[in-house]
Image (cartoon, rainbow, N blue to C red):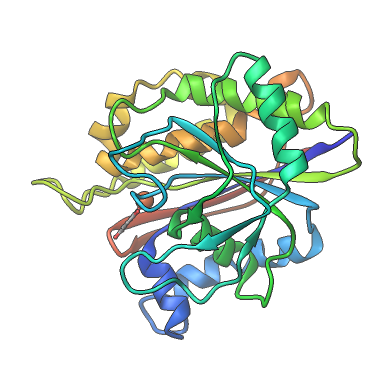
Length: 284
Ligand code: DHB
Ligand code: FE
């Protein structure tokens, strides 16, 4: 059977992608951020998965106000990096895993979660920047990736609780797949940031670090946080953090297994307008 070996949590910011693409990672502004991800990049090399199930959000790239799926699973064989206004990022095409993705869709939908199945989709910084942060800039990504897009852009957005329960259903789906795959599940986006309105630039270090503490120790309780708390405390775009609860819900302890091991934890401000968090939890 396939199994979830670890969960990874990481912010995304388009400016991080630009720093990589323009060779600015060693500049004083960016160096501490990339240094903070070094242990994660080493760990990725030593713990290469067979598949990454990557929970992220699209930023009006693949979807628009014309169509707003709450949860969308990418079942295509490949996903092209999107043109977000400055041309597509010079990063490898993302290869999918159609058979495994179709199995997960079947299992999760029959397990009462309504997913949108997407057979053609471009992927934006929400997906490519976490891949760069964790894997560097290789000629090809280390393994197939199943993109899983969550609407956290246009209200109504899904609750943290729904996301946490969905993670549990994804775990059941993975474990019912009859192939010995090592699967990592990634939750991306966040941490605190607000890009518009009078509170633009908002960062909340204390709240972010409490979120990390609770994500590790008591995700079930954390999942009860209402969306308005995210917006008030972590800014309008801080709501991206509900996606981390999908990854956390898929970990063994939530299903009665052992607590995960904290492999790496990192927090940094600022990256563009955003507080950046990175966490790796390994099933033991
Ligand atoms: C920024 C952060 C985001 O999450 C995003 O999607 C776009 C921009 C920023 O910090 O500039
Ligand atoms: Fe974003």
